[in-house]
Image 1 (cartoon, helix red, strand yellow):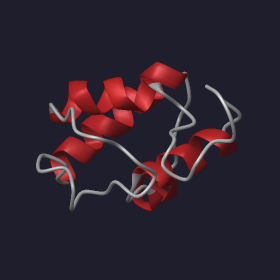
Image 2 (tube, helix red, strand yellow):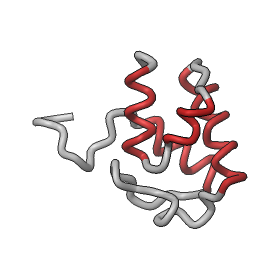
Image 3 (cartoon, helix red, strand yellow):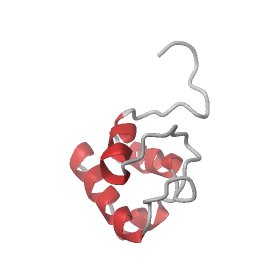
Image 4 (cartoon, helix red, strand yellow):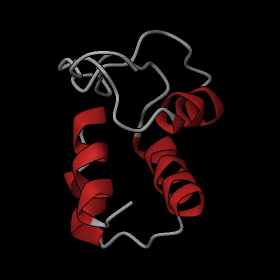
Length: 84
């Protein structure tokens, strides 16, 4: 990547493939992308998202962290907290 990362640039490019796998979502992703933007991001698919994040990044999320994730930016914040 060239130049400074903008607010819309994802720190973790794996998130795009995770969203394609879990939600069949291939639209643009930004830190602000939330369940309002992704039609299949409901409570059941949120569990699938959490499991895929845990598997992909070899981490375990707490219940609080699972609840904290309400956007792509929240995912990145949690991942950074886990040091990945």
